[in-house]
Length: 124
Image (tube, rainbow, N blue to C red; front, top):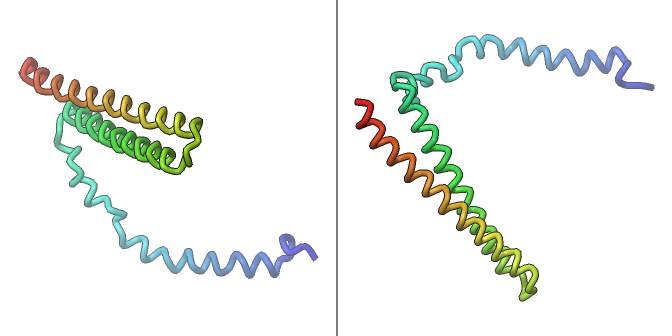
């Protein structure tokens, strides 16, 4: 007997789902889904330049965290290489790539900070 085409099976599956959905509707109608708190994130009253600057800083901070994780991953690979030269070389390459990435990201963050301070002074 094919249970997917059986009407009793469908009723047993669909009716509880519909009941849960319709019982949850009054509860969902009373919630604002965090829309009142959306104004507190700091993007509403700022000018577009400061919004873009904050987004760039957040992205660069996330990327720097990611490069630190890459460096730690390379260190872990180095520790578990077991003296195998090929694995140690790959781990060193991962660590070196993470360090280079971190240097690039920190340089970009410094350039963005410098452009912001000098750019705001020039435009005002």
